[in-house]
Amino acid sequence: MRNAKCIVYADSNSNHLQQVYTGLTMLHRQGVLNVDMRVSKEARKTKTPFSVQSNILHLELERKKLCFDTSDSALIDSEALERCDFLFKRSFNPNSDQANYSKYVLPYGLNYLVYADGFDRFAFKRCALFYHTKDWKKELIKQADFLGKLHYKVSTSALYSRPVLRDNPKILFLARLWDTHTDSFFTVTEEQRLQREQINKQRVECIAMLQETFKDKFTGGLIATDFALKEKPKFVLKNTDLTSKKNYINTVKSHDICIASTGLHGSIGWKFGEYIAMSKAIVSEKNENTVRGLEPNIHFQEFDSATDCVERVKGLVEHRDDRFEMMKQNHLFYESHLRPDKLLMRCFRQVL
Image (cartoon, rainbow, N blue to C red; front, side):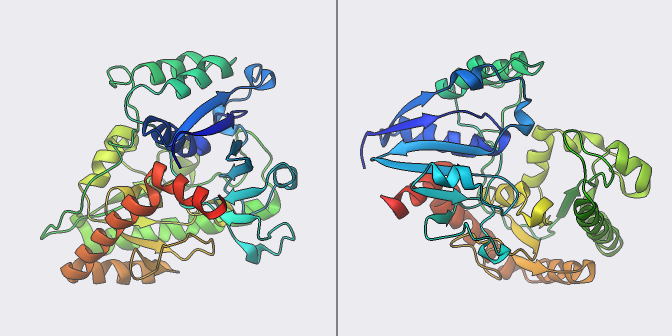
């Protein structure tokens, strides 16, 4: 495929979609795609904050109508499916007993927030046309400031590092507690409340046991939200600088073993993809979503309790060869499956 016409219907600029947009920009720069990005009149009038815009993107390539759904939930949007020939689903889980899963619904892969290096004219265009909100100027500055002088931009080069083998490995687990009563943009149902309680409980137990077991080898705690400060102040991070994006990325790079927990709706959180991009050894909660090419005991160790989490981390601390092999495998996975341009090309090749 060379200079293939790709019409992108950019009706949303959500954070969940930035990885797809970044992949499209990279393939356009490489001459693989000739991207025509179109923003509808309705999207230009939106007053919805980018953080809660739709996580669905439609495009046309080689006479095929494709859809990318990067939502946390495993549910398939029936309207989106009707509009396309193939739908790529981030939280791909046919075991969710939904009839809309079919041969036309395919796994997308790991998702995380990442922007293209340098000035991205497509990203600038989206920001220039989309926003009628208080975030408009901030987002426009972020895209124009490609050197990062005014605003730190999480670019592909920033979110990348090669494996490093250290004699005294450090462990990292930064997490947030989900408010079990309210959400900024929607009502928390009883089912969601119970799910959030379970997620919170597991995260706190893991942090407590990791702190106790690994002492100064462990960096971690809860992000200092109002809810966390009220419910579990003992485990809230004292160093709030760690949670700024730039400091967080640098912190990940300086650690060796990183913990990933299951997100809302049973999704694989963004941290998992970030850890792989930075070639880390990973200990992760078990997850039912399908990611092609990603294998337990090769790319990550699984746990289903705080005790299990600690034991998995111990194994990686004590067995340096196993730890370094996992780091190398994750570096290879990034280069072949996860780098935004590679991820998109793998999707395209399945259907073209």
